[in-house]
Length: 260
Image (cartoon, rainbow, N blue to C red; front, top):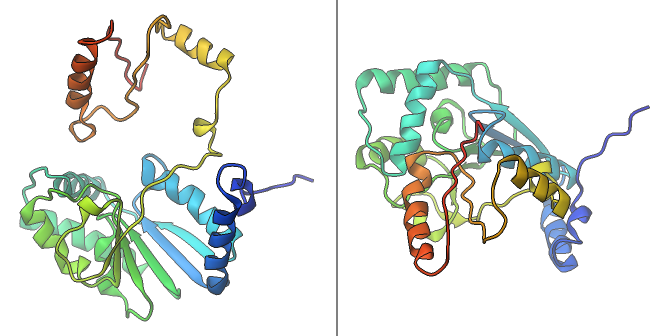
């Protein structure tokens, strides 16, 4: 018979102070048995899905009955919400009537086929944001925004405020991301799961094999940016930082895409 296991809070003791683990356990105890549901836009790809994959299991291990649901949508819907995502980071967006109609209609359809009977509802990022207006709100709703909100597009922000202001609380990733809104805002910095395979420590042999595979020289310091190659990850900033570093140390460039 197969034996299955998920990470427990005790597994983190070698990585953090035991007092921190005990404090988390104490904070979770009053919520034992409560039902929590999380909504986002995808089960895989990106930091939000990775966070929820680990966090929902950890919360269940602490006694909270935690679920994870993903909204369904058309390609047009996800194209529009990608523009919302970028607009909240300062990009431009054409908020046409048809775009607003597609966005709101898809969310309404999701609400019709999604039944809630929970003690907390946590909505992640802008894609599922309007869900809140389609339910009789008899428990706290929390909007967890993982996006840099320091310079949002004005039109997009004013449009989304219609739903943001209906939430009981908003969680952002740092103080600089706080914006004008009705709900109280709290800061929770993002974190990684140290037990995910991509976050594990590599042996010197494994590191050497990977560097050799991509023909990366090891006779000088190595600086790497690990991210999508797009405007929002600031590759230009990496290049500028490299130029500054090259003024003081010998350095060369070797670029690799995620496909390679």
